[in-house]
Amino acid sequence: MGSEVGAQAARARALAVLRIRGRALAVALLPSAAAVILVAGGTSDHLVGPGWDAARAVVSAVALVVLLAAGVIALVVARARPAVSPTVPIAEDAAPDLYRLVRDLAERLDVPAPSAIALTPDCDSWLEDRTHPAHGPPAHEERDELAGAAGGRHRRTAAPVLVIGSPFLWWMRVGELRAVLAPVVAGTGPSAHPDIAAARRFVRGLDAAVATAADRGRCPAFRLACAGIGWVARLLLRSCRQHAAEMERGVAAAAAERAQAVDYGVRIVAQEQVGLAYAGWDRLLTRVALPAWRMGRWPSRLDAGVVAALTELSRRDRLAEGFASRLGERPACDLLEEPGTVDEAASLLAARLFHGGPAECGPDWAPVDWSEYPEEVVDRKWRTDAARLHRVLDALGVRRAPDPTAHDPNGPTLSRVLDHLTTPPDADADTRATSPSPGTPGATPDAEPASRAPAAPATEATEADADTTADTTAGIDADTTADIDADTTADIDADLHPDQDTPRTPRTATLAARLSAELAREEAAAPPAPAPGTSPSGQAGPDALWDVDALPLFPLQPPRTERELLADHVTAMVCCAAMDTAGAQPGLDWLDGPTLLVGGERATDLTPRVLSLVEDGDPDPLRVWLSDLGIRPEKPVRLV
Image 1: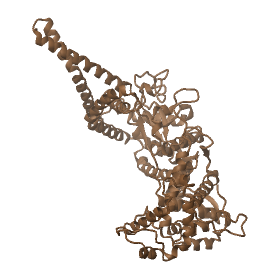
Image 2: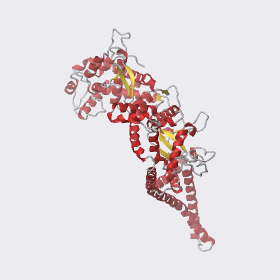
Image 3: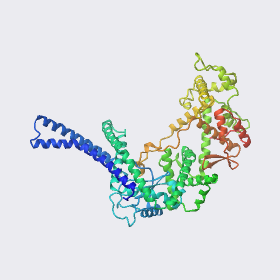
Image 4: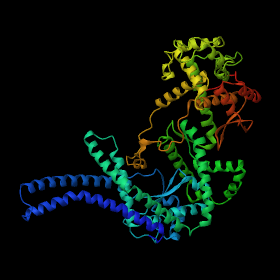
C-alpha cells in the first residue's frame, strides 16, 4: 500500500474494524477463560468446596453453550454467500484489447491488475471482491488474468473484479474510458493490503449473515437460531459501520490521489461524458425500453441506442453540439471482439434488473431490433391499449357510434371515446343545483339533472351487465347508485382539493378506475417467469449468485396513476385513428420513445390536447387537431 494520506487513514479504520472483531472473540472466550480458572483452582486444591464445585459446573456449562453459539455464528459468517452485483462477464479472449488497456493502466499506476472484467447495464464502475468460495470454483492457477508474464506468481487472494458500465463503452472514446477507469483501477492497491482485505471480508460476512438469518423459508426449529444469529450480526455491523464507511472513503481518496498522475486532464473532460451518458441511459430506459418490456419485447441493442439518443440530443440542443464531433474518434466498444453479442447480453440483463423479465427468450419474451421497434412495439402497444379501452367501455355499457358507410358499422371508433369523455355543457352547475351536500341528512344521489337524460341508456346497460362484467370491473362496485355517489364525491373533492393525479370529471374517474382494474387483472393473469438460477446442464448459473426473487431490483418508475393510464389509452386510440384514416406511421424517438409520424414529422402537440379531454372533458382542442390533419374519428380502427 502506498504512502497516500487516504491509504493510511483507511488502514487505521480497518484496524478499528478488526479490533471490534477481536473484542467479539474475547467476549465469546470470556466464559471459557473463567471456566479454565475455576477448573485449575480445583485441581490445585485452591478453590475447593461445594460452592466452588457448583460454580465450576455452572460456568463450564455456560462456557460450552457460549462456545457452541460462537462457533455456529462464526461458521455462518464465514460460509454465508456475500451479495454479488449482476454483471455480464467478459473473458480475455472476448476483449483482448480491453484487458491490455486495463493491464497497462495498472502498470502505470503501480498497482495489482484486476483479476477479471465484467460489464453492468448502468453508468458506474467499481471493483468487486469475488474471492468467496460461493462465487465459483477457483481457477486452476490462481493468478490474475490481467497480470501477464510479470504477474504470473501465485497469489493466496485474487485481485478484485473490475466492473464497467456498459454505456461507457459505447459512448466514450478509448482515451476517455482509460481516464475514467484510472481511479477505479488504482483502488486495487489499497485493496491488496492484508488489514483492509480482512476488514472487508469481515464486514461482507456480517452482511451476508444478516441476509441468511432473514430467510423466512426455513422450518420453525431453525428460526429461533437464525433470529439469534441475525441479532448478533446486526449488533456487530452497527458497531463497525462508521469505521467501515471511513475505511472505504480513505481507499477512494487514496485511489484518486494515485490516479492524478495518469490522464488527469482528459479525466476532467471525460467526467462531462459520464453525466451525459447517465442522462441518455436513463432517458432511453424510461422512454424507449420500458414500453417494449411491457409488451414482452426487449431491445437487444440498448448500448447502441445510447449513442443514437445522445447524438439526437446533440442535434436538438445547441449546447451539445460539441459532443457529436467526438464520434469521429475510436469508440471504446471497439476494444471488444464482438460488440453486438456483448450488447445483447447487457440488454437482456438490463431488462431483468429494471423490469423483472425472464432470463431466457421465449414466445412472450423476444428480442427486438431498433428497425423493428415501430411495428413490433409502438404499433402493437397502441392497438393493445385501444382494445383495452374499448373493452372497458363495453363493460360500462357505452353505446357505439355506428358509421353506415364503414365496412364494419359497429366497429371501435375514436368518436365513441370523445363522446363519452366530453363533459355536458351545464353538467357541473346542474350537479351542484340538484345534489344535496354530503352532510345533509337523507341526501341521495338518485336525482339526475335533465341535461344528463341522454346518458340514461348507458346507466341502464351498466346495471344490466353488472353481474356479467364482475371480472372486468375487478372490485369496482357495479351498482349505479354507488358509482354515481362515488363519482360525485370524487368530483367535489377534486374541486376542493385539486390533484394532478386525480381525474376531475365523474366519467373520467370511472373510466380511469376501471382501466386500472382491467390492467391489474391482466398483469395478475400473466404466466410467471420460469425459475432462474440454473443452466440447461443443471449447473448453477450466474443468477444463483444474487437474489432473483427480488426482481426487478431497480424499478424504473412507480406504477402509473389512473390519470396517466387513461391519458395513455386515449393517446393510443388517437394514434390508431391517425394510422388507419390519415396514413400516419408509428415511429421511434430516441428521447421520447413511441411517437406518431404524420407526413414524416413528429406530432409533438398531441399530449396537451389529450389532457384537455381527460382532465377537463373539453374535446374541442383535440377535434380541431384531428380536423387539421384529416383524421376521421367516426371511422372504425383495427385493434389487437
